[in-house]
Image 1 (cartoon, rainbow, N blue to C red):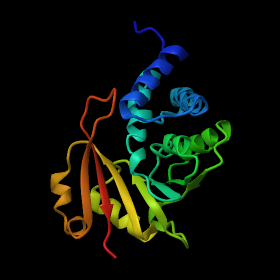
Image 2 (tube, helix red, strand yellow; image 1 turned 90 degrees about the horizontal axis):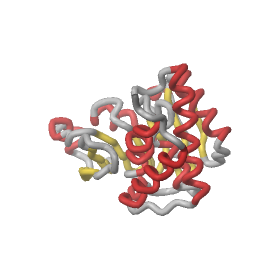
Image 3 (cartoon, rainbow, N blue to C red; image 1 turned 45 degrees about the vertical axis):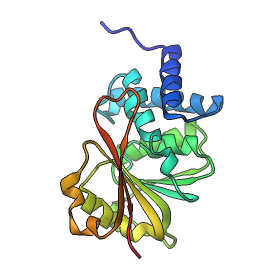
Length: 215
C-alpha cells in the first residue's frame, strides 16, 4: 500500500521540478502551489474533478505541466480557455502575479472549485467565468490565450481568434506532436511554432504549439 504523501515530500517534489524548469519562485508562491494541490485532492475525492488521484502525481501532471509554459506568456492579460478545474491558469497566475488571468469554462463544479481556490489562496489577479466558450465575448482582446488540449488545434484556434488581440498568441498544450492537426489550413496560414516540453515527473510526451494568427 502506497504511503500517503506528506507536505515535506510534496514540497521536495515541487522544488525539484521547479529547479529542472529553471523557475525561481518565492516561498509564498510555492506554499500556494502546494495548498492548491491539497485543495484539489480534497475536492477530487468528492467531485471527481481530475483523473489524477494521488497528490504526488498532481505535482508533475498539473503544477509542473502548467508551469512549463510560463516562459512563453506574453502581455498583461491572459485567458485560460476551457480551464477545467483551473489548469494551467491557476499555477500560472500564482507564478506570474503581474498578469491578470481570466479562467473560462462551462462546467459548474470545475469553475466552483477554481473560484474556491481563488478565494482560499487570495489570488487577486484571477477572475473565474462560467460560460460557453462560443458565447463568451470581450471588448478588449487578450494578449495570451492558453488551452490544454481540450479540442483539435483548428477548433481551439477558431474559438480563440475572436478573443485574441491582433498581435496576441495562442499557447496550446498537446501530448504527442500534432503533425496532422498542424496541416489544417487555418493553422498552416498562421505563424506557428512547436516546442517539445521537458516536463519534470511527466513521462508522456508534451508539446507546446504557439500560434500567432496573421492580422
